[in-house]
Length: 307
Image 1: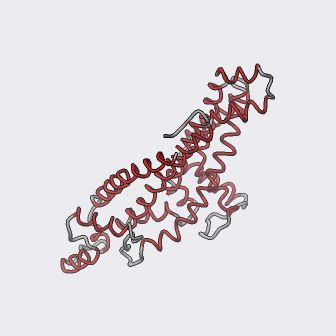
Image 2: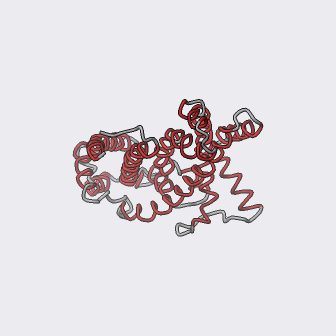
Image 3: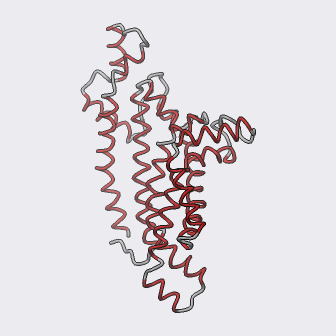
């Protein structure tokens, strides 16, 4: 196990460097960020040159990337064009998005897995058909439609929630935004759990457990569910980073100033330092989540060994 972890950590280094290089190149070809600072009028050549020199944009692209990566390993993600360090923006944005993501993941695990087990054990019955139709509707409806409808009904019409969520809001205020954020993923988790459970029910080790006379609840929890959750854990692990980076729509609807909001503002204002800094952290989240998912495989299935 130790050798496997060390090998995976070493493999993460070139992946991290390649991903950040690709992000850095894509962000820097969006346009001239200095032109965006001057508004509708064109920048004065002297002013533009001064700003480029101040933010290091007058140097070759490879040198900008090398400088950026050198600063990243010291904890410096650069400075936004408004003079505020990117780390300060992260300090205010990531806590609220992490809490929102936790709420969404809890919905996926509790509701998604529960519905998946319910339908997987009753495949072909009315409850299975009803859940499949419901998940199909959730997948088909765009997230911004779901969010706006829930905000209109629960916030404006019925007054159960506030139309906007403050950064310091407790978890109770994040239930509806978290449900909106997790809606599509929750539907996929339900379908994935159902399919995996239905397939493993026909396995030899399940028939052996039934023949030995083990209680039904023990067969489901100790034998069937553990191996069936492997693809579900894989999906949820990769979905953590996707939820944090893909919360732009949800955070805009509920006026949450999190990672999605800062990314949207950075792209809108062509603030390359903010975009690259936030996406760099999201890349790290993806890599760590994938490593943890791989380690959980051995916990769920004793037949898996890492060398």
